[in-house]
Image (cartoon, rainbow, N blue to C red):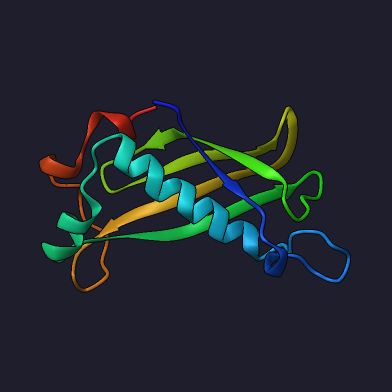
Length: 130
């Protein structure tokens, strides 16, 4: 499953060099992961209501080119690895055909105490599989 979404860079996300501040890419990636979950029918609000969560355990980002104000960015997300309680999502941020960011995000499914647990069947949707 490959999911895509778009966003436009806003002025306040840029630094004094007129480039997107590196920390804002984390927000872009998070937005895209949530859109990915919706597209694969993973009911995140229901998981939270049931006392579960999806924690981010690791983020690897390679910054390749700067993005600037008013750039339209396309974010592609796809599952790279899936275990019983965790997985890795590969994400790319593109401006046209230019690759801006390449990232790998490790997630862990947790219970209400924040401890890793096997993903229950209702949330172990096919789209999480590579």
